[in-house]
Length: 279
Ligand SMILES: NC(=O)c1ccc[n+]([C@@H]2O[C@H](COP(=O)([O-])OP(=O)(O)OC[C@H]3O[C@@H](n4cnc5c(N)ncnc54)[C@H](OP(=O)(O)O)[C@@H]3O)[C@@H](O)[C@H]2O)c1
Image (tube, rainbow, N blue to C red):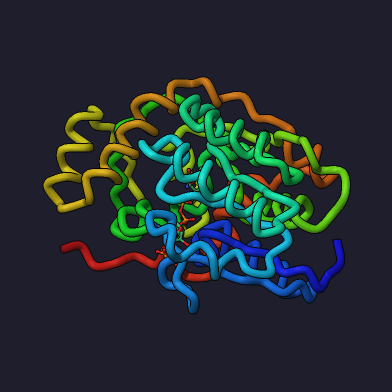
């Protein structure tokens, strides 16, 4: 692939897409960021936005929202990848969820779509603690979740972005399914302990039953599809099936993934976890 080929980055304002776009720009690859808030708005739910997003694109990073396991995702991914192939896209890199059986239908659609493909099956992102729904609880000093002793090998979004860029621009990644995890599995309580150590703050972790958790989210006005998704992730996927780390980062990049402790130290140094006043 030449460096003048344009690459479409869906979810390009999100945790992985933003990093993918930044890395591509740094090596001089033209990028089109696609999301509802992008300069040219792109919406998975509005097919009229797809044509302009795909114009002149040679490769695409697919970070579907809200989740490949959500109802309707296979139909949307099918229509989008068909349109992408017709528009001349020659390479697709799909971000998928490790252990999400429901996401496999979307993976197969991408694998059968025609363009060269790579699937990135990622475990839970470290950045959920610093750039998503766990940020406010960490800053507030109390994290309440419906999970206890099940360990998860949290993966750093920087590692996912490095693999995505390699697959979008380099050779040798076509037809590969990479299981992307960190090097070490931690329970959520242990992860909070690492963050507390890195920040020098006291941060408490509390386990609650799943129904109490989803009920509280609904009471706070969290959209029902987000509540359902979190219920699925904590109630179904986080059952230990993903506890053993995988070597997808090493397979793709020839190096080890970043450890959670290194992520925690680097993030603490940015001030992202500075305590907020208790309400
Ligand atoms: N978070 C994890 O731990 C994890 C683990 C494994 C796999 N994944 C997968 O990663 C993908 C991204 O999830 P995430 O939670 O990490 O979110 P994210 O990428 O941090 O944020 C979502 C991105 O998608 C965009 N977006 C949201 N709704 C959209 C829509 N209807 N049409 C177009 N773009 C839309 C958002 O921008 P706008 O708001 O501007 O549209 C944003 O750029 C999902 O497929 C998820 O299954 C996540």
